[in-house]
Image (cartoon, rainbow, N blue to C red; front, side):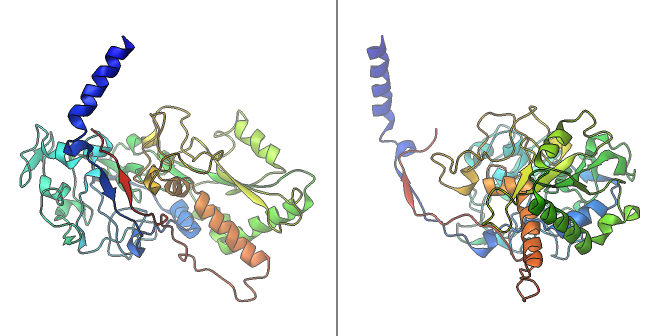
Length: 420
């Protein structure tokens, strides 16, 4: 019986090995440009988000995000680059964008699993290139979703962004377009939201214009030394707290914030951080922690600033993203590389299924560390080190938006066949 099945496999291989589907394909070398750099939120953006007034607002379901240009914005909808101080101006769309298919960022792919334009164009609901795809809500242009596949523009050229309906108030085109309620300042109901200290649930909105403050959960930042006997760690932890409050005094002004607890929760040790998050009162009488920074002055005295940033391994920033409980959203720390991953967007795949759909960068380890706040808090710690060590007084500094992230360049390689 096993020999019989082997024979069948050999026959199948012989029938398809010379077809176009299984012919070798060369993947070109990649050298990222400035337009592909991710510019994540700064801690100033976090503080602005904490202060922002939240209202229930009418929105449109399933907006189709534009490809960001001019700095690779990581945040909300396209804008004129001015922004409103709440992170909504971080995605700077160009008037002319590179010709590329947009299906991967559309709900048809993100929600429906149809991610190949060849399949999408031939859906029963589609009339093909030059036509429309019909949903229960409206008709959407096929050429706007798959312009490269449909020949609207040529590879390497530019294509103009599709026209924006007036009802979108400067936002991107929609796929589905059903009216619903969202929360002001949080684009697309929290999809791609990267502020771990503010978690709002637009599903609880009842009327347009309602106060959404009670629908939002605000989290704290934990700071601690490594142990109760770590005098150096305690000194650095207290200095870090003071640095934050001196730099952002609004965090001490409870009249300007929608919560009444201390934003920085000081702990006596790393063990107390553990006890804190496991207590029965956690999330009730005691605020939840978005992250915690632990300074260690005892393990290796040769390191002037030895610290660890602790994040929630199963956390996500928008309640609307909830999925199978306790699925990991933080990259594993027990291995350096994802086996066989060729690109950054394959470095942190969802291997078990049911993981919250947090944004377009969720399969990138860099993206996940931006969503959970680690990269922004790491930058804040480094700003503190520059100041506390005396480097800032000596004239050394890094501009707040001076750090961006790009994937590593890669050489070309051959793929021996394509996926069916």
